[in-house]
Amino acid sequence: MPVPTPDSAEPPAPTCTAGPSEPAARYEVLVAGGGPAGCAAALTLARAGRSVLLADAGSGPAKAGESLAAVAAVLLDDLGIGPQVLGSGHLPCYRRLSAWGSSELRSVHSIRDPYGHGRLLDRALFDRRLRAAARTAGADLAERSTVRPPLRIPEGGWSVELHGPAGRRSVRCDWLVDATGRAAALAIRCGARRRTLDRLTATHLTLGPGPEVVDGCSLVESDPDGWWYTAPLPSRRRLVTWFTDADLPAATPPDAGRFLRRMLRTRHIRTRAEPHPADPGLVPRRAPAHSAHLDRPWGDGWIAAGDAAVAFDPLSAQGVLTALVTGLNAGEALDARLRGHRSALAEYGHGVRAVYAGYLREHRSVHRLEGRWAGHPFWARRTQDPHQWPVADARGSTGFSGTAR
Image 1 (cartoon, rainbow, N blue to C red):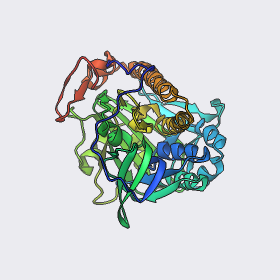
Image 2: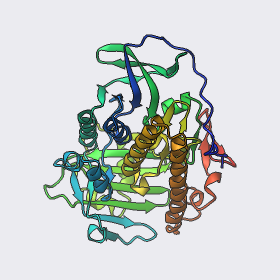
Image 3: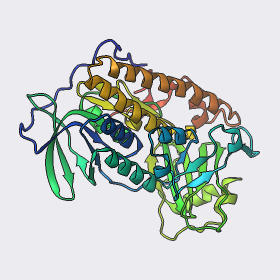
Image 4: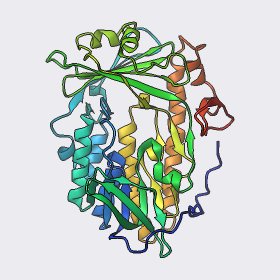
């Protein structure tokens, strides 16, 4: 493992070129990324009285089929936005089904969860409501606005150019919050290194509307080269996703025919997908799903939250919850730092590393439960020392490394 930055010392400031000295507007904090992590950070900082600009690029297709753990409702209620964000538009998730380690289907019912049932999100709606809550709390919102690489200015702080519907504009801020997802665009620009653990990729297809009755459950099914996930969507459509490593022959190309033929070889996914027609001409989409973390989730003038700081395998079903928690904690840590608490960001970094270490232990344990295909590359990798998994270097090639990159 890379040696982490000691908690007792702040990482050195990134080397950036001086920018313009007269930006049009000034904020204490600019948050890049309008998803759960960015919104939680912006809301927390705005409620603490900080001047905040939340920039949401709004680019790319909206995420679909994501689940929210039941405990997240407690967090949202503590923030005072539970009913606002979790109102109509999402589906309750009463059961989690799995065929893992056996061909038999097992069920975990929400009645066993002290926090009640989870939710199958309309993710675009969920994110819009979070941004609205941040704006109500006092944050300024720049929608459909991309954040260009930040520039250090001689007087201190950052000059940042935003590209949005009205064109380009520059703002000045004292601190940056990187909530740009797995890209960690700002943190990497400022000198952090992304440590990618594996090559997991998700290929997903949204099937057409099915019967009126919705089963209200998600399903995971393993196979020799990876695993499948399916869940109903609030639109009555159904998401089907195939997970494998991008460097393996089983990585499905973006071809609906091959995707569907492979899906029809499953036992349980198939029975839930068959009532839903495949829209003609629809092409499966591919997205990264690897585990990753930054070597340091904060630095001189910046802090990272959500997938930018630590990204989990979707099998954990903790992605949205972790984004909310790290966004909230990053906002609190940054506010504490602005109030003079010098060790606040180091404490945040220590917490992020502890969460990731716990995740790695659980990740390995869960994959060891599937022993039927222990000799297949996908499964063999996940029962090894995780720092020996194949990783992509800066050029995108694959090899084995003694440390996770």
